[in-house]
Length: 167
Length: 167
Image (cartoon, each protein chain N blue to C red):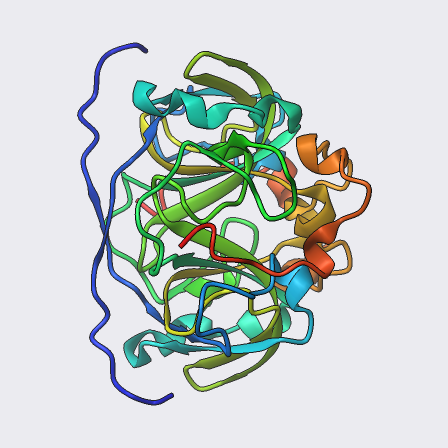
């Protein structure tokens, strides 16, 4: 178990692009709950359109994407929703060793290779890596304990906006 | 919006390795709910250990990893939990354009750079891409509609095991 591995790099080819109204990393919604009603659209590469069959039966999608405007990372960060430092893996800070983001968004409609959604908390022209359906049956953890976030008086994600700390 | 982009490839360097008891792609649990009590351990690259500070306050983690044994992809697949074909993006099939998996697992304990967890539904020696805390406040979608999965009589993820269809 403690054998040393040289971890091989992984090449990821984006499957499409996410278009939103957010053009700067400041003043963005924090998490999709802070972006209720904010629309975005995925333009999937047209050769992959067949892979969307049946997705219109789902109300929520998990988007995995490249945080393409983030440079470098920090091992400890002060997240938008707290005023204390935490290890980056205990936060959703974009300034992480692999600049990969996830958002659980609300599906609005699918037209050909375009997927319209609500809850757009990512930058315009974000490279999309994957779309997965959210399974109500297996993806909820309603009794989860959420560390430092549980200690906040109120959830600020609904109203707080980003600033330039992770630029 | 309809401008043609040449999407640049993204280089992802694994941040560690996931060790589990699953050595073949057949007969594995399907989703962490099918792997309750099945332990796994992350060995994070030691230079990143500081990034785990505060993660021990969370009961559940989102792991993002490379489905490293999957070759190629199919645009339509028959998922383990159904007997009908669906577009790959409407399933959690590993045979997808980018072989990236996510699992919401239960944190057991953290010792130095090792993160012990339950709900191990991935292969042994899976390259880890990211660890994020699960936020009860923003990551649950208890009223989600789940397409073809809702139409199944019972959720098979608890008892079904994988076979070799995605080899």
